[in-house]
Length: 353
Image (cartoon, rainbow, N blue to C red):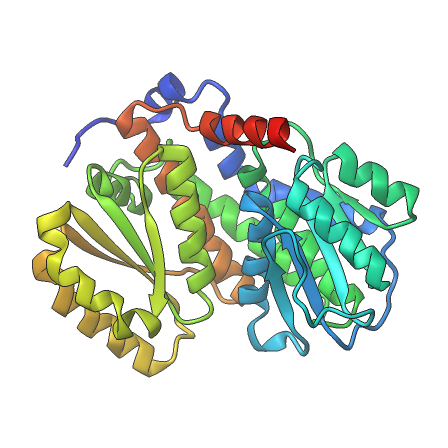
C-alpha cells in the first residue's frame, strides 16, 4: 500500500486545474443548480409516458443517479437513453430531457431532433453549444449549467436538472428541500474526506488500498448500482486505469464464476457499495459474495452510504467515489483533468462525418 501523502500539496502537484476543488464543490453546485433550474421557468405539464434522459458520458450520470435517489417516489418511468436513438416506445406523452454539458454531443443532438419529430415535450440542460442554440430557436426550455467544468464534474447540476424536470412533468415530487439538506451534508463530508482531512480517512484509505489493482465496483440493488457505474467512469477518466461496474443480484448469476480465475489474470479488487435501504437478501448476498471471492481478490472493500434521505445517501457515495478517483490519480502521478483520447476519437469521427 502506497504511503504517498494525499494532502493539499500532494494533490496540487498533479492537479493544476483543481479538479478536486470541483469535486468538493458539489454542495455549492446543488444549491446553484436549484437557482438555475428555477430561472428556466419550466412550468408544469403532464407526461403519462414518463421521462427519458438522453445523454452520454458524464452528462448522462444525472439521470441514472436521480432515478436511484427518487426510488419508489417516482410514480412514472424515468429512464436513460445513451445513444443516437430514443427508446422505441417514446411518444408525444413522454418528456425528453436532453443533457449535454458542451451542447455539441452528436448523440444527444440526434435525440433532441427525434423528440421534436414525434412531438414530445423537451427540456435541455447544457452550458451552451449547438444544443442551446437549437433549443432557444425552437422555444424549448433550457436549464443552464455553470461553465468551466469537466462534464463529469457537473454531476450536481445535471442531477438537480433531472429532478426538476421530473417534478415538472409529474414523474416525481419536488425534491428541493431534500436537495438543500443534502448539500449541507455533503459540505461536511467534504471536510472529512477531502485533502485537509485525516490521512487515514475513508476516501484516502480506500484509494491507497485500490492503488495498483483493477477495481470492480458492485452496486447492491437499484439504489447503489448506478453509483457503481459512476465510480467506474470516474476511475477510468480521472485515474486513467481500467475499472468495471456490476450489480447484485445479477453478478451472482455469472460474474462470481469469473472471479475464480481473477488471481491468474491480474490484481482485481472488489468494492461493494451498500445502502441501509437494501433488501435483506441483497445484504446477505453481499456477505456471501465477499467470502466466496476473497481468495482470488486483491482486496474486498464494503462501503456504506451516509445520510437519511435517498438523495443524501446516493450523493454521499458519489462524493466518496469522485474523491477516491482523484486520489488514485495523485497516487499514480496522473493529472485528473485531461481526457485526450476521447478528444482524438471525436476528431476522427468529425473528419469521417
